[in-house]
Length: 169
Image (cartoon, rainbow, N blue to C red; front, side, top):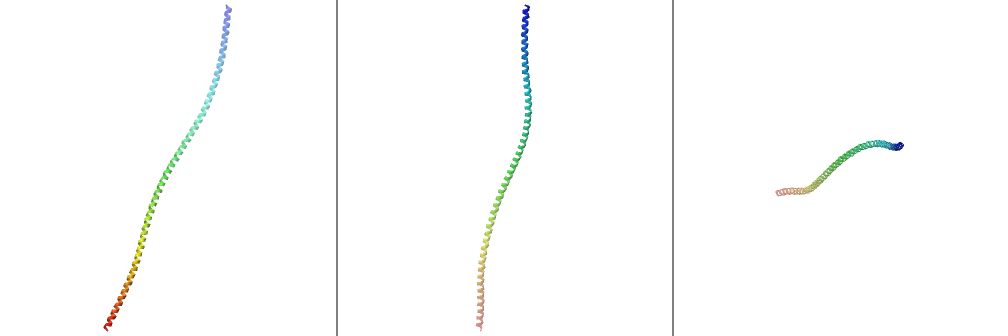
């Protein structure tokens, strides 16, 4: 019986030894998995740090681009303001040109009216000159008739004096 017990203990010891061996192998396998997991975690950490560095670089580049975009936007807004100011200046100049054009039209109308008035005056002067020439001609004829009448009257007086002297004699 003792032998049987020893055999059972031997078998139990062998079974326990096999179980310890199996647990040791399992532990080694788990340690290998843990090592692989640690290596993977370290690689993931390194990748994350690398990606973080890239993200920081991209973020800095994005900030710089944002600053450039804001500067470009301010430049565009400045140009737009200048264009609007130029458009207002252009519209003022167009309005001034329209006013000058109207002034010129009014001046042309006034010049035309003045020209017509001058032409009317010239026509009146011409008519007056013609009338004056006609009256001068009529006055010259009247003067000739008056001189002829004076001459005839003087001749008649001379004849009357002669006839009167002749009658006295």
